[in-house]
Length: 498
Image (cartoon, rainbow, N blue to C red; front, side, top):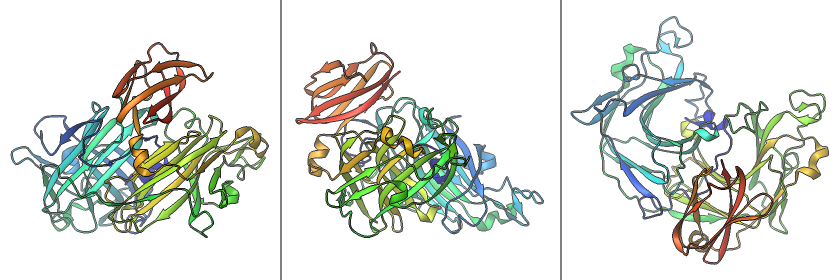
């Protein structure tokens, strides 16, 4: 459902683990919510997105976004019954208008309509949200999809969807969704609720199409799925590692952290992507894009510079992880990449049964000399879902004569075991920050050192405890490097003072 929106945003910057244990004790306070407060005006809201009716929804292919808007409950046809504490959700009928080719195709609808009944929160920074409930009944026909969901949107990054998890509504069953250990930063918008998606409908078909009823439910701890840990390896195995490119319009949005305008995407060769897989050294080197630049071609070039924001991904794709979990670890050996580019390790989970929606996405910045550890945690990988993990570089496509100046990044396999990496993990928030930076870890934080871009140490703290707060109000606005030490192991991250 969110594929179009996600394609139009920059890679999200979720560097914390996502869901090591669904309801486990961690550094974040838990907020448990369910179906309730239905009579309280303004708590629950309605919203609609709609997509072109081109066969993609039925074929589980990428949807073409057409529009979106707040939507009233009467128009959405959601029934909030405060007395029974239930919500009934239906397909959409109010948009159908015979003779209006935008919304109708003869006697049937003409748009794929997603109606969401949800709660929006902006007060969950530094906390973990757990959303649970029970599906009382459903007569909804199989041509529609109904789910419970949690989304976390980042207004500071053009309302990018930095976290998204869903669960199908099955009659008689409980659902429990969580933000896990994903770090909800100040200002982020958290949405949780219910959605129905399918072709908008002629009102004469309402009785036949059915509906779904949900109510409150207690959170349940699912069994921790068996896990698999992967790293940079098997680089000589034919067709294991793949290359793909997405590109976006060069309109200033990338530099200003605003929503990107998607322009195209395609499989891409390693030579064209300029990714170097060295099986002997077991390293991958990733670069900005140069092969698209063509002087005089206004699509790809603007004079001596490029004219598209190019995202090149070098990754592995798996479809055999249903019921399991994946942890992706590795080391950034070195980087000379300029700040004009973004380089990350990532895990994505795509759902072909839902139009290749990106149902899970987590990234980590590539910091020279540091390891990354990303995991799917307790996210429920369903049969048929496609799991991708790898490395991506994003920025303006480049004139080849700038290659030496732009730099590149080299990554390799992790040098520590998964258990050691988990123990050394530290969470830092908010980012950007104006007054204080908060830190938390499973074990005692030994040191916190902050350096400015000139390499000068501006903060030196030794908390010797699991949590710490550092006053950064006196620092000048800009980008800083934060080095922390846990169990003798140093971690590095960037933060923005504003």
